[in-house]
Amino acid sequence: MIRTPLRPLARILPARDKGENPDAIERENIRARHKQIQDRSRARAEGRLLVLGLFFFSAFLVVGARMGMLATSDPTEPMASAAGTPIAAQRGDIVDRQGRILATNFETHSLYAQPPQMVDPVQAAKGLVEIFPDLNEERLIRDFTGKRKFLWIKKKISPEQKQAVHDLGDPGLMFGPREMRLYPNGRLAAHVLGGASFGKEGVNAAEVIGVAGVERQFDGYLRDPANAGKPLQLSLDLTVQAAAERVLWGGMRLMNARGATAVLMDVHTGEVVSMVSLPDFDPNDRPRPPTSGNDPSVSPLFNRAVQGLYELGSTFKIFAVAQALDLGLITPDTLIDIRGPLRWGRFAIRDFHYYGKELSATEVIVKSSNIGSARIAQEIGADGQRAFLNGLGFLDPTPFELVESSGAQPLLPKNWSELSTMTISYGHGLSASPLHLATAYAAIANGGHYVSPTILKREGPQYGPRVMSENAAAASRAMLRLVVTSGTASFGEVPGYAVAGKTGTADKPKPSGGYYEDKVIATFATMFPAYDPKYVLVVTLDEPSENSGSEPRRTAGWTAVPVAAEMIARIAPLLGLRPDIEPKVLAGITLAAD
Image 1 (spheres, helix red, strand yellow):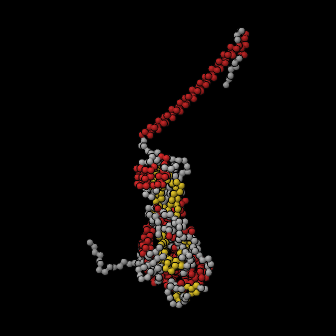
Image 2 (cartoon, helix red, strand yellow):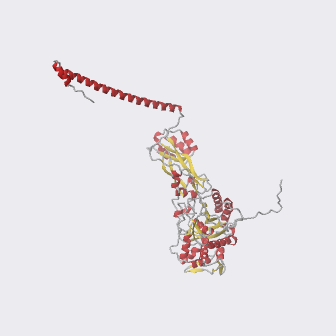
Image 3 (tube, one colour):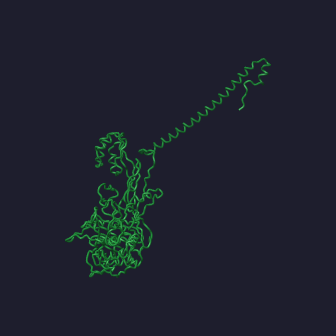
């Protein structure tokens, strides 16, 4: 910018020569400069006013357009929102091996109150008690008329209940959207699924978290947004599970048992196709854990299949014989000295019946001789027995995908002495779960390979390390078949399906030590079809008593075996196994065409 001097010499000098006043020139230049400054300020102000005017015009235009849109749209109720950490509400479905829904999500509502906004708190409390009889009217009135600003009333309500609350008309009663976990099959597979509850909760959402079973085991997978739309597929078969639960419930009632469990497992893949524990519960309304008592098994939440640690009785005898066969110590025809009682210090081992002086190894299993089994175990030794049972998975919790399984550590003898070796050979002195037993029998059924049990669907055989030779496994299966055809499990034969298995009856231990005289754990471990086993089934009854005769009968042959046989007859066709029988020709009946 070029500034013009206020007293330019080019004009001052000529003005002096002419006798003019030079100050007038300076005053004139000052007026011209001030006029230029005023003109620039006026132009700048006019520009700013123009921009501000355009801004206000645009704002009024946007507001007008929005008002026009609202005037032409359908009215909706505004929803309150608050800043905070967003709650992940979506949870993946759980399906069975056929893709049928076991657990899914259901949209419902929660009910809460804001007492400062209530018009008639007392009347609102009375109305809520009529809708929800489990609420306490006096407490509601106290909360509504006190200093509380916010109050949860119900975390989940039905559409009918929501409408009834809405009809009360109190503005202080409000609803929030809620996603809840729904188990459409009710009690079916309750112990496997476990159940879910709410974690972080807000007015507009609630976090659903697993509390037990696969819901807790796979909680991270089910809540992972990356798995959205991809369900968790289990190895369970919904139809087989329903049939197994129905039969086991009837068997438990018929045998007057305190509880019961059944595990059905594929011997080649390790898939658990059915797992039942009774009594059970509805995961839609999961009961609270017991707060008193020393026996956890009294709770319906207790999963007997994986958490129940029992002395499984004579079902263990086949392991002693199988190991001896594998080591070449015996053959199926080797004679075993069973003269008794067999004494070890102050302890004596006896048989349930007198079987003579000696039995073959096969007859030891068929007739279930404690002494014969103990004699064989003596030949094996404590270290060998322990190593063999460890290979079958009896010394550690099963690697099964339920949180309850990890805590089921088998009860082992503190000192694995020769006496322990003998008693463990016929199922006393070591407590394990029915799932442990099913896993061990699967190794015999599949030809000698350990298979890890799983609740997830698998494709193809999943063989682990070999724990016995194929010949030892085949000979053991032949012995177990004879147990059904001519031994202690004669009630276990199912027409069309060759069944092999072993009974086990163990006295139930007292919490204070010792054993009950009239309470037992009855177990039948079976595999079918016997000549090419596909499945292992273990049925265990807690304190059964068959009372149709003059005296109660508690042994597994009278209690667990008939229940297992009925279960096999029901579920074998559902598993796709065809009965191996020829149709009979009915006398006097001919087929005539129309």
